[in-house]
Length: 189
Image (cartoon, rainbow, N blue to C red; front, side):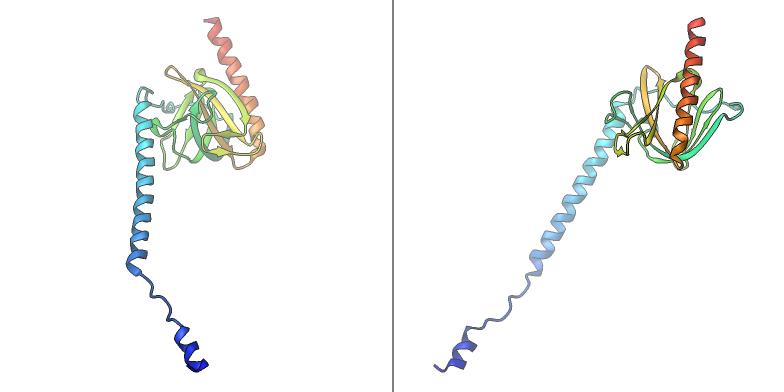
C-alpha cells in the first residue's frame, strides 16, 4: 500500500450528532427544573397554611394623625422575632415589595404597591433596631431597619431598607421613643 492510501484509510468521518439523545436530556432537565420550582411553591403554600393562626393584618385608621416621619424604600419580609430565618408568609407578609412607611402617633403605616398594606398600632410596637439581615436578605452591618411588633400572640420582626440609608438612625430613635411612651402608658393603666 502506498503511503497516501494508508493515510486516507485511517481518516474517519466526523461523528453524527445524536439529536434524540440531546433533546431527551434537555427535556429531562426542563422537567427537573419545573419539579424543583413546583416543590418550592408548594413549600411556600404549606408554610402559609401552618401560619394560618395569625390574625388578619390591621389596616390604618381613617385619621391616623400627622406624620412624624416618612420613608420610601423596600420591605424585605417578616420573621418570628429573634429568629431571622423563620419567615412569615401568611397574609402576604413574606412578599418583598417597595414600601412607603409613615409614622404617626397612631402607629406605623406600611403601604406596599402590589402587595398587602398593613398598619402597626403604636401599642403593638416593641422595638426598633439596625441589623444586617432578615430571611433571604443580608446586607452590611446596620443596613436594615428591623421593627419588632406584636400581632396576636406573636412577636414579629419586619425588615425595611430605606432608599436613603442615613434615615435609619432617625427611625430607630423615633420608634424607640414611641415604644417607651406606649410601655409607660400601659404600665399606668
